[in-house]
Image 1 (tube, one colour):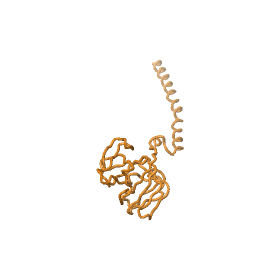
Image 2 (cartoon, rainbow, N blue to C red):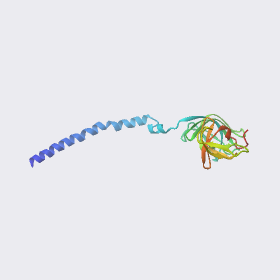
Image 3 (tube, rainbow, N blue to C red):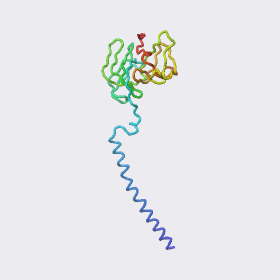
Image 4 (spheres, rainbow, N blue to C red):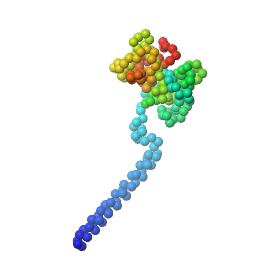
Amino acid sequence: MKRSLLVAAIIYTLTGCQTSNPPEAIAPTPQASPAIANNSPISTQELATVPSSQTCNISAYVIDKDPQGLNVRMNASSRSKILTKLPTNTDAAFVDIVASQGDWVQIDKAESARRDFEFHGKGWLYTQLLGTSTRGYGTKGVNVYQEASEKSKVVGRIPDQKEVKLLSCRGSYAKIQYENITGWLAREAQCPNPLTTCP
């Protein structure tokens, strides 16, 4: 009996020593992690998901129907500062697009059809509130490509003078959506003016 009590006491002592040391060694790690996280405005996970920016050289027009206007933001985020609002209650508002990042495009100029509103400077717009129209006048429509290249596979055709929703851009190509067709329009297939045909 004494022998079994002695063995139990030794096991208890050894177990107690083993369990008391690791928490002390591990304790500093949780304290260090919040300090790193608090010093960084963007987490590593967020950095990994930020889409890269593409240079663009296209124009489009506002299709947003919000009577409050379309927000032009300082950065490509709905939480970013609003620089101005583009009118949505006018005949048309046109924008010149210079870059694309995720669901956002960067503009360097905007103006209304009546020239009663102008914005000069860089700002970001939510892409899907912009559109363009198709050219292809007097033809069976325009080709929509799988990639931003006329050498790419044709994924569909859109009749002339149809409004399409802008999704993104790359160079002079516009990524668009029309009904069940999503793909890229070449510059010569785009007409960024809803009021008239383009030359």
